[in-house]
Image (tube, rainbow, N blue to C red; front, side, top):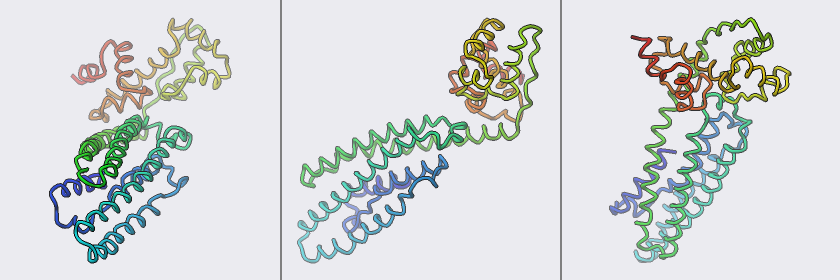
Length: 325
């Protein structure tokens, strides 16, 4: 997808320089951009078997479009003057681009639909990646489609003349998208690798807390620790109560009585203690704070920092440096 965007932008730049080869053929790279993203999405979420491989249709259409340009338009050039040929060529590429835009828009919204409403199909990846970066990509992609639609409409409105500068905002936006994607994918890849490594190596279970009173509360704590439920960032009081076969009010009351704190505070205390073990383990000395935070059950780095400071009276970075010294 990134390659298709880059080649499309390069071709647009060469057009402004009157590059001689582009007088004979303009490769419709735009046909491949959104379909490539769609296929990437299916592979990344590991759900490709459940959806149709759109590239099986797009790539032949892409190749046929190139053949039409080479054969038909070249044939037209032999029987028409250059100015007539240039107009026919612009009309053809504009219609071609309009078709590409419609297909792209459909796939773009379908990709959004999968991310929004098909989460039950990719729960495994959600345990490593909250997919916020993909949501941001959808927003940026939406802006690109608005700019693209504007440029195409202007091209038709101006009768295919003097329209090229209306594509400049789109080129700038897609260039920003390329660099942003590169940064995000490197960052996400590292986080996932580190979190998987943490899970594969494993950390010894925390020792059972000992309290003389409130046997039921001890059972609740033991259940959370032994089953490592605090690592589930979606765990709620209702879910835990159902698993314990207790009422929500009973569990909440026991926690409040024994800790003088609420359910979330209790969970975060377990998560902070777990994160401390990771921060002190030299195996993970080069791992990012974000990876450790997410693998400890927190939804974000900011939430982790806030909870850690509350429970440990220091930031994770300060804690790691102090212990290492």
